[in-house]
Length: 197
Image 1: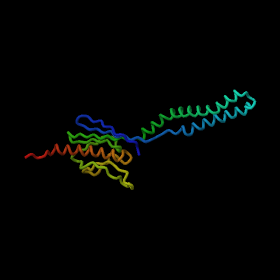
Image 2: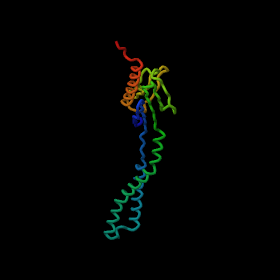
Image 3: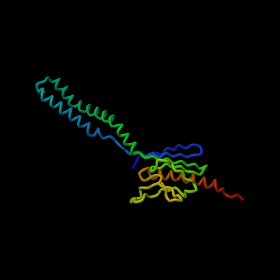
Image 4: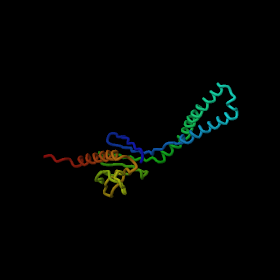
């Protein structure tokens, strides 16, 4: 599942929805590098304590050494987390960009057209409102629990999937289906105005 955002970029005469899904990717280098660096500092300080024979040093020096033994590993851990996070940020962003999905839906009720750039194509397809029977949220093929749904258009040529099960929640897809249905209805009313007596 992708974290999906829907941006409404509508302008006069055209409703534009940009649906973008990004994977949740987190850097976990801090989980291994931080503790390892802290353990390395503890090992070095322990080696120094054994080498200088801490029992023979004055009390103040021993207290400073104990303070270093307690504080320095935490400081090194934090510094390691900061450095590894900075180093991995570009890599994590590249993974997010590579695995993100974008779909653009443009509704043009005045001209009776819908332009769609789905996640499956690199170009924009244009459909006439006359070709579209309805927009609906339907269970994905093979979905067992009914939670995996797709947003599709029922057209003269068969269904056209706009958003697959990985992109968008059920409510987001339902809102988009409602917006498409509303545009189809307005266009139909414009083409076939009610008869006046």
